[in-house]
Length: 89
Image 1 (cartoon, rainbow, N blue to C red):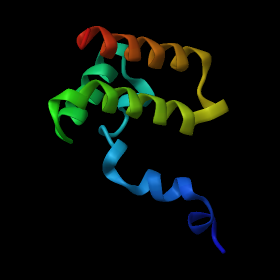
Image 2 (cartoon, one colour):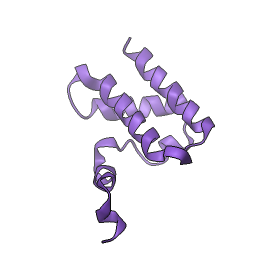
Image 3 (cartoon, rainbow, N blue to C red):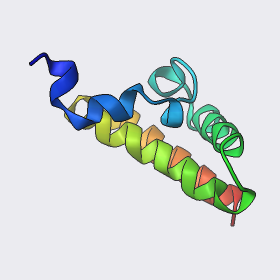
């Protein structure tokens, strides 16, 4: 069995549900990342769940990166989460 069939996370990653565009997480600022996940969340469903969906995208990325996510990038993701929360506060 090849790796693409072994892990449940492969199927989740292949879905577009958490896609916010290439390279946004890798090099974007907290504001750029927050803007991208909010825009993607707005396209997906009702307005009353935008914040939840945006935070889910950030958490999903953070969890998938795991140990490979540097402390600096993890801090940027946390800042982006706070920006999303502030947007809907």
